[in-house]
Length: 592
Image (cartoon, rainbow, N blue to C red):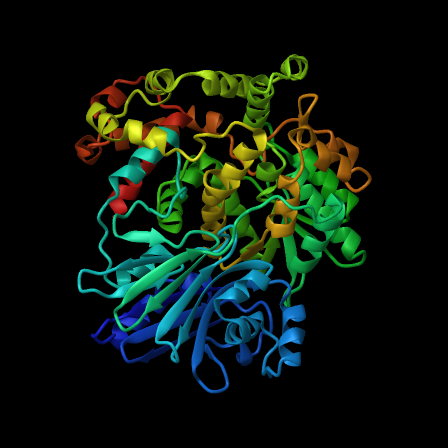
């Protein structure tokens, strides 16, 4: 796992100081080694977190034998062993056991189509001196990030994090439409746009060819998510976990006590009956979101070396600035702070690799909102008996809200949102973007549960969760691996009908069945949905949090923003979790 960056000067020179600053700003992503190469106005650099082949043979940039190709690479190709054997049969030789070298030779052998053979997560750049181009690629679901932009002087800059682009000279101008989508819909990372007008993200499942002669670049989508059966659910998960346990350093796991992380930990025990499993959890004794009894039960059953931590509101406020710096862009709620602290705990105990459960909620309909969309599909398709049966099983208000929202005409949805969800948005700002934003919303046109879940994977839920995960883990030099986003598992889940995902008011129906005998029953039959969350409602009700937010809202900087009606916000007697968006946007703006 690494951080990568590069600059193409397009006729100019790249100064040594620029390279040093570019590398230094992403040091946290790879504290074990660093390297850079500069020639003819092209610079590529890397910070390495050594996971596979800890020797200096893994140094980057890595060159092929005749020095015509150089790679800087962030990620893990889990099937690199099989690909290595295929390349050896084709005549390639290797000097390391890294997957980095496999990716380099795979490009040498198959060109840009090499990525279609990879099972893993990655963002990499290969400088092809033969063709005079940079080849950049990102994995199917965008687990690893890659940003790019152009400076006023015409430089092309790319980096694993936004900070590298600004070191390279890309401007920090704001993108108003992205800000609207965030404040109005809580959408982030849902398109190639960022909160910065001149910065783009290479979309998941896309390749870029940048021609260093100055002829520009092309971007092509190489992966299309298509439903495809790959086998038994439990076997697919077992294989995905097995692949992600391969490392030359210890591998642990996050453990929330929910269905997903518990399934991973139990699979780890099945695969390695005698190996010590270290788990890391955030718990909140006495809170409505506490999962300690469930996490402790799983840890006990698998005989894990369990580690727990309990952050509080004072910790959040102390870390707020670093959390904002870590994430680089606004985020939807304070819930992801629990993940930030879990990664910090793991790093303090010497861990470098953790498995985590992101993805299963999206592919197997784990959220309450999925129940609502299932009701919507049943109603649209005229399955009234099934609709009434599932409606009778609803035990949470969210599915009813989702159903009602789905049935509303567009004009009524806009009124409801402005009246109840974000009445504080500046009216002129709203008028400028609302209708276009609604037409372009990723969920527009979704009429079935599987369409809803596909949009969640590609545009709404997964992209933002992956950004949170990447930044929170890499802030502490931790690599996280996500078995549920193995592309075979995702494609298989998407091939299953809605009734295998939501049935009798229960989410993840087929997955729960597949995990029987693997998970403790108390976990398998859980119907509440928590995950790595913080007790936001309790935190926001404290005097400490209210004073902190009031100080921000009463500031002259807050009043000067064109995105909200500061007077309306200031008139509120208290602030709830829904006010996090303007607060977070303000904190972000102060860092720009």
